[in-house]
Amino acid sequence: MQWYFVAALLTILTSSQGILTTLSQSDGGYKYDYATVPFLAEVYKLLVSSFLLWRENKSSPFPRMTTEWKSMCLYPIPSLIYLIHNNVQFLTLTYVDTSTYQIMGNLKIVTTGILFRLFLKRRLSNLQWMAIVLLAVGTTTSQVKGCGETACDSLFSAPIQGYMLGILSACLSALAGVYTEFLMKKNNDSLYWQNVQLYMFGVIFNMARFILDDVKREFEQGPWWQHLFNGYSFTTWMVVLNLGSTGLLVSWLMKYADNIVKVYSTSMAMLLTMALSVYLFDFKPTLQLFLGIIICMMSLHMYFASASMLIPDVLRGPEEGSHGKLPLISKISGHRQPIFKEKDIELPFRHGLIVGLLVPWIVQWHLEAPVLFVPLLPFSTHQSCRWRLIISTTVEMGLVERIY
Image (cartoon, rainbow, N blue to C red; front, side, top):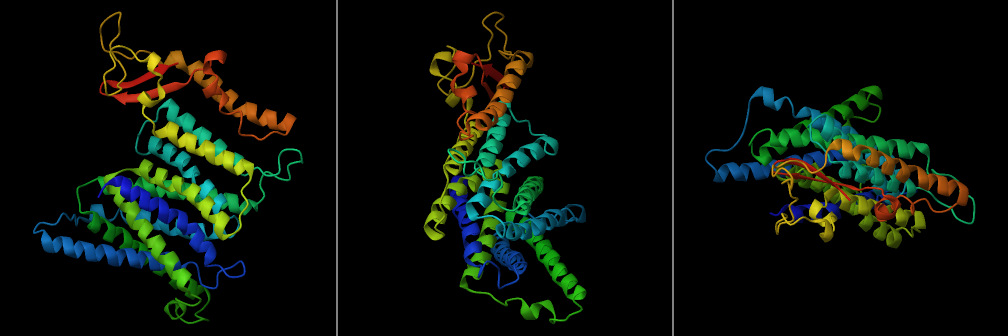
């Protein structure tokens, strides 16, 4: 199974997740206990993974299963984080619409990059960090409404609780994703065996929450399993199936791809969610929302594009091969060394970043213009204004940085 097929399927399921959750509401609220949905999704994932593990062990005489306690005791941690994250998602959707929810979800790119650097020691190039900053600007601008000839009502049209919960959800998603990738790739165990351990603890943590709620209510409504399915409809079961299937696809990507692919897939779901929201919920997208989405997509392109796609042909040296690799050989000394050093690019990078962030807000303040037109100037007018865009790529001899 190719990773891009799994990524495309994850995009579709992630896009439908917020829509199905909204459709499951009645009169602006949930008739069912939304905390039961993550629990049933964990049960579904555990059953599917157990069946696949049984079938794999049946066909393989030597299953890849690590049963040491030192390794197994690490699996409750992501389950606990996912437990909190799944419940925060439902709370977030009670304050914001589905498109805003998906756009704020792109903040997990920022938090994922930070956690990659801090915990997994993964270095991001300057261009990738600039793409992350642009993504943050795009998601923020998409919230601006009513700017133009009339005065801006408010930067935050939804309750502040919705945005705080959205930021918390992004941080929890990145933390759980980074830690899960670490667990999945730390050894060569079977994916299904690793899933069984993850989802087993997920079921246990959800059950513990139900028991704790019963104790607090002194069992006024009876034990939790008696009202587990109260208020459930066909749409609610679709939410459970969607959430469980999304988790299975994410674990596959963590094992055979990485967090960046997962983040890219879920971010692409933003466009599909917006289109479906217009049809299903009579949602009227604003100009700022469209501009914010465009900036987010450009940021994603900047983050994942190779250096050969970003460097003009006129700047490619004669040593560059057919595969678009950057030359490492100095024409003066003949030794393989970086063409530019960090000190050569530090000042232009800071200037371009500061100008790209400050100018749009100043323009909006004075001219009441849409906020998203100016951040692109450092990248489109670099020749006339002598602003420099840093392009980084990882090659065999190390990180090479070029400026144009």
